[in-house]
Each structure stands twice: as structure tokens, then as C-alpha cells.
Image: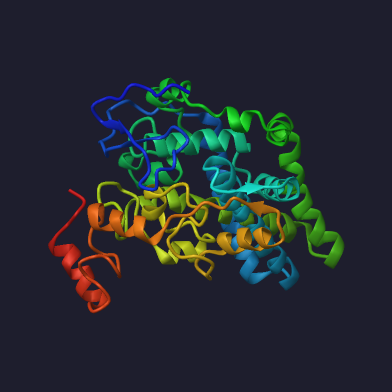
Length: 352
């Protein structure tokens, strides 16, 4: 794909490790323009419905449903989350590792459970997010506000800049994958089967759960939970937290979010080194269940060619563009407490 001409707000770049980034280009943060929101009325109705049924399902989860249903719901949430993180995100969007067909099939089914569009559509949006991050061509542009980046972007039509620039994006690699083409072609048949029907039938017929509890807990609450955990990466992880790797972008680091969403909260690192299969500096740990998942399949040979970044490259980048909060190579170092680091960040803000 021929590189697109740069403009005043963006420059083509190569990674610090010399690894090409799928033709992506790094953009500086810019304020959103005044283009009025053109509402997508189908999603204006669907999103509040999802939240309402999800809240009711959460009530049933804690007050009425059986423990087997609750455990099954948590398992479905984990499966859907891994489908997004280990599948759509790290495998297909960033090509951070390669997978044999059994693993591809597993994460493809998991991603369908998440109900976040087909993988091909997901990859298009995510590559646009990285290529034009926090600009009007970013589908969930964080400069439009926390609500927009979390859920509002689903309720409006895409910005004209997204529509124009997405036509130039090369996603031929995923469009040429037979498994992904099959999922996209039959998505609206597969979706209700794995997202609504299967999660409802299993509790009812295997442990005699009520139809109400099964549907609202295992289907709707689980769906709402998975979606909101994913969306926090687009919203909260572009607003709150430290920036040890690149202070010039909005993406931040958050261990709590990583714990909640299977390893995707180390967002400042990920936007700095998007080809790293760990999406974080740390490896397999409770904070990065997606990496544990990928490492397991690497051990049995189903995942291979795992890309990562050396300590030397990370250190150079931290020293060059970090906000100083890195515990090893920042100005804080291990000798300073977290309170001292936080105080220094408040005194010397790096986001302006």
C-alpha cells in the first residue's frame, strides 16, 4: 500500500524496534471539530436497551440466579473478552503473533460471543484508531469527551474524516482470510446463536435455571459487562493515568483496568509499541490474562512468531518521550514512593 501523504497533524513513522506498523501513522492530539453528531437511530435505541437489560441482569446475578449461572456468566465474559483481546486485537488487528487454525477458530468463536461486529469490521475500526488516534478520523475520538469515546460513538454516524480516510486503509490481510470472510458473511446468523440463544439454553436445560435468570444474566448482563470493560480502554484509558512511554498521546497506563479486562489497560505502552503481543511491558501475570492465554497456546505450538520489544528499546523510548513515571527509567526510579511520583506529575504536568 502506498503511504498516504502527511498533513499538518500527522507524520509517517517507523517503530523504535524497526518493525513496520501495518502502514499506520502516528498523529498528534488535536481537538475535535464542530461537526454536529448525525445520530444512528437504530443504535440510539439499542444501546439504552442493552444498558437497561444489563442492569436488571446484574440485579438478578447478585440476588436471584443460581451459582452455576453466575459461574457460567463469568466464563462467557472471559471467553468474549479473550476473543476481543487475544483474537481481534492482538492476532488480527496488529498481527502481533501468528496462530494455527484451531486457535484461530477458538478466538473467532469467542469474538463472536462478544457481539462487537465481525472481526473484519473490528480490525478496520481499530487500525483507524491507531493510525489517526484522538483525531476526527478516530472512530472513538477521545477528544470528543468521555461519553463519546465510551459509548456515544456507537450512537452516531461516522465522522466524515473517518469515512474519507478509511477508504485508503489497507485491510486486505483480514479480508483475504476465509475464516473471517465466513464470519462476516454469516455474522447476523451466528450472532444470535452464540450471544443470546446458547447462553440462555445452557442454564435452563443443564441446571434448571429459570428462563428469566438465564436470559438476563447469562446473555444480557454478560454482554453489557464485556462491552463496558472493552469500552473503558477507549474512554478511561485515554483520560486517567500515567504516561511512562509517551507523554505526547492521550493513552495512559492502568493496572486496575488491566486486571478488569484481561490485560488491556497498559494503553500508553500499547500505543507506543502496538506490535508487542503482550500489549504491555509486563509478561504473563494476573494483570495480563490475555498474555497467559497466548503463551499457553505458544507452548503447544498453536501460537507462534510472537513479537515483543527488547528492554533496550523500551528504555530508550522511556527516556526520550516518557513522562518520567516509569519505575526503572523515569526520573522517579525505585527510590521514590508512588506518592512522590504522583506529586511530581501534578507539579510538572506533561499533557499540555
